[in-house]
Image (cartoon, rainbow, N blue to C red; front, side):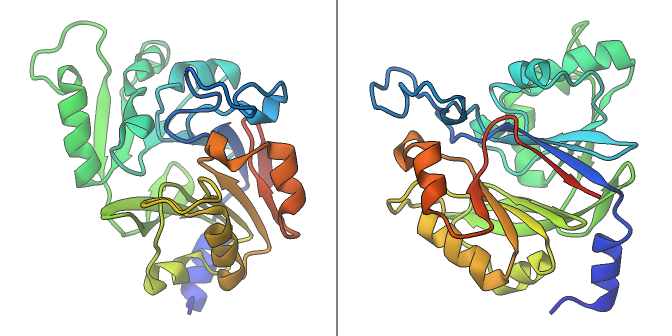
Length: 270
């Protein structure tokens, strides 16, 4: 059960938040390269999904969760001219590959970028972007201030962040609760103690890959069951595959209070 202190800190002290879905697709995106299926050929813009990421904004702070391979285009599309930090969920390529493009913010803001990641993800960043961490750097490489996170709560600017440990098959992944908003991607199991951190959330974003069983992602029915079990009034599903089906068709099948997210969707929590 949530303690009174926990509920107060995360639900009351958190400033108003504005959430923008920068991408809602799985690792291959939708449309998937070379795929002739009807969803990938759809003319409905809600069936076009860049790799999954969100922009989190308060009146004083702006950060993204994950830098996908589409990061540059996502920032241009959302017209993000200031960025204070990057928060990482886990080290898979579809969540970290765009990190190099923070260089533009380094240049215009004249500051290093604050990067928040657990030790597992930091190891991947050091492998993938060694030039950003070299003792002698080539001019123009990303400038990074690396912050190690685990399961203790912390702040990014004025926004309190509570990590939530979830499982992506055998890989530990971090979800995050910020006030009355919780974001979890790339998971197929959440232990009971970590579910307790989600309780009291008003808006829950959760991965739901497709209808068929998958080794490391929640299916549509599994995601629906989890939302109902925890008792969340409003949920949006993300990290969606072309195998899910058409956005408009699936949304009509979902229970009240649950929808598929889509690229460009914006939410406000006052």
